[in-house]
Each structure stands twice: as C-alpha cells, then as structure tokens.
Length: 275
Image 1 (cartoon, rainbow, N blue to C red):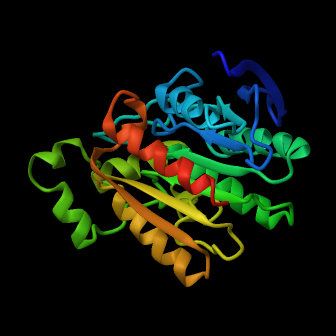
Image 2 (cartoon, helix red, strand yellow; image 1 turned 30 degrees about the vertical axis):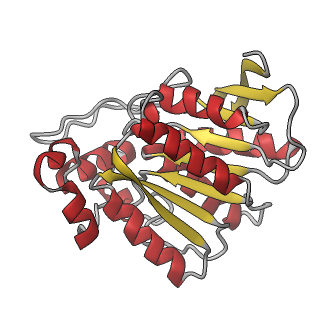
Image 3 (tube, rainbow, N blue to C red; image 1 turned 90 degrees about the vertical axis):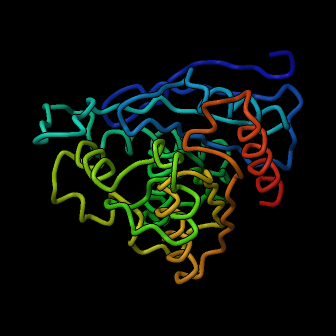
C-alpha cells in the first residue's frame, strides 16, 4: 500500500505468540486513536486475510488511523444438527478471548487510548475484552464498535422491527436461536459457561463501558442481540448509537465491493472521528 506500511508480527499471549497485523499510515493523523479490530466467523473460521479483517482495516487505516488486527485461536467446527459433539480442544474459551486481550494490552502499552471493535463473533470478543479491562481497573478503551454482533448466549426474541426486516426471502440468510446456541456452546465447550456473564457480555454488568457504536445489517436476526444490548447499555448509562445499514445482510464487511461495505465502513469512520 502506497500510504500504508503493513506488517505481520506477533505479541505474546498466555499460550504463546499471537499473530497480529499492523496497518500504519505513513502520514498518521495525530488525533486519531488506534483501532484494534477483531474479525468474526462463528469462533471457528476467519483470519488476517479475511476481507472482514483485512479490507476493513485497509479502509479505516486509509484515513490516517493506526489499525491492528488479530488472528485469535479458532475452535473446531461444530454440527448444526444432531447431538453436540465437542471434540477436545484447547482453543475454546477463554483462549480466543485471551488472545484478543493480549493484542489489546500490548497495543495499550504504546498507545494508552485505543478503540476496540469487531464483527459478529469478533464483536463478542471485543466487548468481553472491554469488560475485562474495566474489571482490572486498567485504562478503559476510548470506544467500542460492534458490527452485526452476537452478544448473548441465547438469541433474544426478535423485536418487531427486526422481524419485519427479515421476513420472506431474507429469512433464508439468517440465524436461528438453535444455531446461535449451538455456536456458543461450541465456543465455550460447557453448558454451564453459557450462563457466565464473563463469557457473553449481553445481560451482564455494563456500567463503565466507553461509548459504543452498534452497526447492524438490515436483514439479520442477530439484530435482536444488538437491539437488546442497546437497551442494556441505556439502562447502564452508557452512551450508544445504534445504526442499521439499509439493504444489507450479515457479514457485509466481508463484501468490500458492496454498497453496504462502503456505507458501513463510512459510518465507522465518521463515528471514530468523534471519539
């Protein structure tokens, strides 16, 4: 990239080196706080080359803001139907969360005020890291971006506005409560952890979080999680902005040539400029 320096390196995590990618503007905006951005993929897929990670980082770093992405531990793929089969794996919770936390704390040693953000499962990890930093009495992040996020162990009931947007043919591209529960069980490896507020931020204690941008896809049942979380943030006295990208589906940040990608990243850039 002509105006960006991009490099792959590692930070030290609890289980060893964690791969990260740095996007450093050649002419950085001195007022722009760095962004740690976390890809999604149902906790089982994705990486530094995933468009949701790489293309989103390129777009935001192109405005003069330092961006770091992280290649956190991925859990084994899961069966959607039939009895759950949880293969033994050391990559389940808290391994992915600890990897993102290591990337965040390392960045904060150099840049004390950062913004955390992520998409889908990555949004869950970003929000959980923000809560961990709060509970450690560490320097809190300056902001939190949660794109088409899964934030609750169980998918909340669909609000009327979300139900209207996902009806008809749009429902073919959405997630059922069964799939979300199976995904989250696969992440934790234990039904008991589904009820642990330290694992899924939805329904937990949210006071002390920084300002939050909730960015939703229009035709996505996960909008129920963002909508519920927005209400929980309001009850906790946390400033939050909830924006729905029109005519978009879950994962639109994985489609960098789409209008939804341009509108979504544009909204993120505008919001970041206000933090």
